[in-house]
Structures are given as C-alpha cells and as structure tokens.
View 1 (cartoon, rainbow, N blue to C red):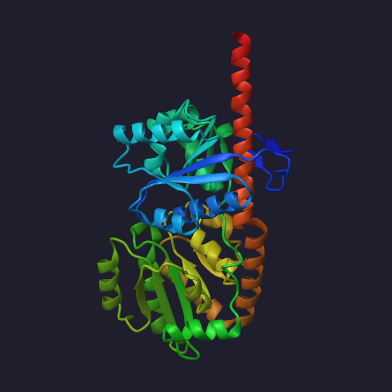
View 2: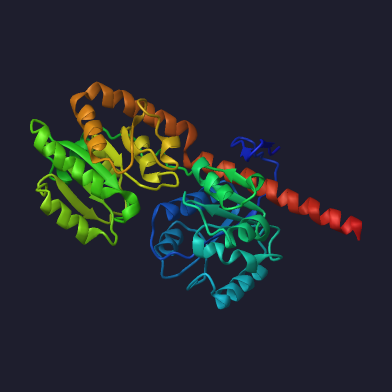
Length: 400
C-alpha cells in the first residue's frame, strides 16, 4: 500500500511503499531540451527505472535532442514535440493531441519550457506534475498559478529548491522533496586496473594529485574560483603535483581559458569540453570539486560520491544537503578560492582522510540517492496524485 506522510511544510514519501498488486501506471515525461545535462540524466534514468518496474513509461521530447537519441537507444518509446518558447501555443496544441491519443495516467513536466505546457494538459490526464531543479526563486507572478493551480503535484529535488518555491508563493503542502538519483552500479569505485587505465588516458603521471570538476561553463558553477585556488596552490604548495580537469562546455569557455593563462596555471588546469560519461574522469581523480554559486542539488557531486570520492562543495543550495561537512567532504563558502585551496591542501596531505571520506560518501549515496530510490519515491507520489484526483472526481459527481 502506498504511504504518504504529511508534515507541517511538505509531503514526505517512502520509497519502499509500492506493492506488486498495485496497478501499473501509464506515464509520460515531458522534456524538450536539445542538450543532455543533469536534468536529462534524471529524466532518462527515471523512465528506464519505471519501465523496468512494469509501468508504461514514455517520453515527449524533441526528436533533434540528445535525450530522444539516448532514450530510443534504451528502448524507450518517444513522441516528437518541439517547444520553441514558453508561449508556444502550437506546441501546446500538438501536445494535447498526443495526450488525447495516448491516454496517460500521469504527465510529468521536467524543465522550464516543459512547465509552460502544463496548463495545456489540464483535463487530458488524471494527474499532472512538475519537477523544479533550480534553487533560485521562480517568477512570483507565474509560479503561484503554475505550481498551485495548473498541476496536481510539485517535485523539488532538495529542501533548498522547496524553500525557493515557497518564497515565490507556492503552497508548501503541494511540494514534495524527491532528491535526484544516481546509478550506483555504473558510478562505483574503480578496480586498480580501471583506475590505471583512466589515469593513463588523461596522461596523468605517477604521483600527480587530481582534482576533477564537471558542469556547464557558466557563472553559476563557479569554476573561476577553482582555477584561482589551483593557481594559489601552485605557488604555496609546490611540493604537491596538482592536476585539475574541468569537464563541460558553456559561454565562459573563452573567459576561463584566458584566466588560466593569466594566472600561469596552464600546466595544472585542463578544460576537457563536454564529455558524455564522467565515470573515467572520476576514476582518475583523488578529489571532486563543485564550487557552485547556485545549485539545486548537485548530481555531479552525487556521481563523484558514488565513485567513492570526497567532495569539496560550496555552501549553497542542495549541496549543503548532499555533502556532510567533514564526513563525506568539505563544505566551503562560495566564491572563496582561498577556502577551496585550503580544502584541497588538506586532502592532498592525508590519504587516510580521503579514503575515510570517500567510503562514507559512497555509503551515503547508495543509501539515500540511488536512481532506484528516486524512481520509487516518484512512483509513490504519482499514485498519491492519481488517487487524489480520482477522489476529487468522485466527490464532484456525488455533489452533482
């Protein structure tokens, strides 16, 4: 039997409450983005997990996007929908046609452009949900209507995201915190040969201490401060052979390249560009850094922790919920390169500390942030929303 526990400010769902005799659901996820970032990782992982559990889980997405490509390769049925912007009326009409034809129990909108389609779906599925992944406050004019009236449930990936929604006027009782998940079988500690291969592929010499970071090269990710920290360490900790690899692409690429040159750390910091799978980069690393200025949760940090890496993370958003300071990593103030440098220095000087934190990090992710747990929690919320709308429909019929 599904379990939903009400608290004063949010709905909490238990991941182990779905049963074999509960009916399978028909679910559509809506994600029209062309790129493939952390959000798309979650959408695809959730869809695959729901399909594996016996549900009809499909995607409505852009056929030119990388999510479509990967989903089709994974055997997921996809329906084509291009959404140009938040006022794309034609896209809303096309989506209605898909929903009318396919008759889903749940439609789950996963990104900002997808959210704009939610009002078009009212009446075309029993339950509508949206996921909010960013920890900055949404538009106070549009947010109360979208989250309080246009949909039946709101998923926030962290308490920080739930707080930002509440600050924008969203009813806290409509928001359920379901943290993002990680494939803990894929992201795991490497064997010695796997680690040696990963380091060799990156040209890492014996004795080099590797810090990795993965994320879009955009201001909110704070990569400039990590680069400044490495430059500081190159001057003050010359006995440590540091190597920092930053994976990702974005508008700041040129600016970060100039900063690396100006700070004289071109031998220590390498920008790798976009990589499809960060696993081997993590396997080659001693420490993972996430110097974000804003962060909904931090899937990249979870992947690193699942790989048994300690994480140096900014004290922002959901990162402070994921990383336990001094247990699974070190929390530092945002935009403080000297604090990042100090944390890296501590890690470099103590293999025992890194090992202890890495072990605790993986245990924490396996227990709380696996993809299976995320999918199970989401499924419980789906059932609660479907049940609620069914009960409301019966009540309306009774009154009539």
